[in-house]
Image (tube, rainbow, N blue to C red):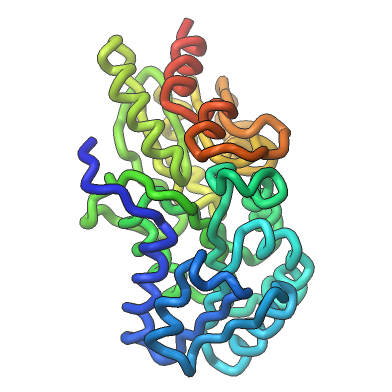
Length: 312
């Protein structure tokens, strides 16, 4: 695995918005008074007439986005993930998803890596909330390169999309030429002993764990599940048949997220042993991103420990 640089996904998001704004006049961007944090201000500086700061009014922002979609625009709405999926849940459900409007939610500062803002701001149930709504597509990019691909794919498809965007600088390690298709996971490394399914920032940790496991004679596959909904059932079943042992890794509660989605597929298609690594039905807390990842076991070391325990 080659790390090209470190770059925050939210920075890549803002830069890609500017590029898309030049290509498509139907794209409009909304923010709930957090434009510098979400980086939508980059779009606002370039295309003032297509940028709307609705203030600290996330529920209203979803209604405005719905109205813009009805009139033919492609609205992209941003705020922190905890506010966009939690505070505005009813508006997302009834105003955007129920009529299947073409609104994209690019919500940043997701998971425990929000850091010092603490448990009140750390969304560890947002994937569960969004994937439970009919008509909603849920995408979780793993690095800055994939963030760009994901946003482009989202605006090119019709219907509601939730893009989960991480806050901190993180390794850029995916290939710019690698395909990105909504609903199709990327097998980053094949293997026969155990399959590690990861999403978001945890993909890098999974690849790091697989490299170290290889040194110990353990052949671990790594699958980048960038789309949580629709989940790639084919790759889950294929890896289950090959390895008989599955690990899921997510910066999210183990309830309702990637691990739950994989468990649903396995229970119906190919029951095998599954271990879910994530936040174990707890709230977040204040700390640096690295401290919190260590505290909740969201590290390559814990992935390695889990894999070795499963193989005993």
